[in-house]
Amino acid sequence: MKFKRVLLKLSGEVLAGPQGFGLDFRAIDRMCRQIAQVAADGIQIGLVVGGGNFFRGRQAVDEGVERSQADYMGMLGTVINALALQDVLERKNDIPTRVLTAIEMRQVAEPYIRRRALRHIEKGRVVIFAAGTGSPYFSTDTTAALRAAEIGAECLVKATKVDGIYDKDPFKYSDAVKFEKLSYMSALQRRIEVMDAASFSLCMENGIPIAVLNVLEEGSLRAFLIEGKNIGTIVSK
Figure 1 (cartoon, rainbow, N blue to C red):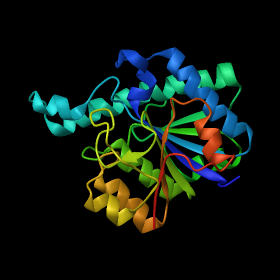
Figure 2: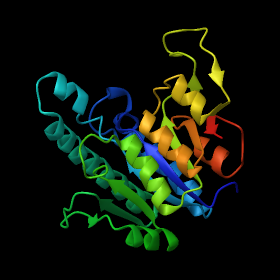
Figure 3: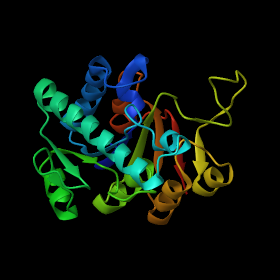
């Protein structure tokens, strides 16, 4: 086992499946099976989920919605995703799970309190952090880096549809070159778009390595976190 505690960042698009919008419970089942595998092997997991499968703040801003309002709308989308993940993890995989939200909504989830989150994690529960940071102008990638630092995660795993970081879009260019390793500064200088600059900077300041993996490939989480295979791309010092 390479890590004891990790922060997993899931994009909303991963939960939407091939339809690209809303929730595809077959895709969620596949994702939750992978999470359950590594949780059952003793890895402590914090999870931050995006909301792009329901609402994209940037697109709303382009349509004239005020930025803060658009960001709050996006945060609510992450709560829907978190509740869906919690249900499948507990009901189908028997993994105890807690949803903690940065915006209080006590009827559906616990408010985010760092010490409470740590206690849940220490008890072996998967903790899903929803509603971003609770403040506009911060992405869920930045939330992931922040929560990773707060809970003392040894690695931030960015779960995507691509098997790592490339010098250009591999879906558009057949000659795209994959990086096995990158430094934080190189990722910032190259303006790698897999995460925003604030996320890379936060991880760099706190010495948290970032692993970019294709989670649509069955068993990829276990292969990296448990078996220690060199898959994906690692961003570190």
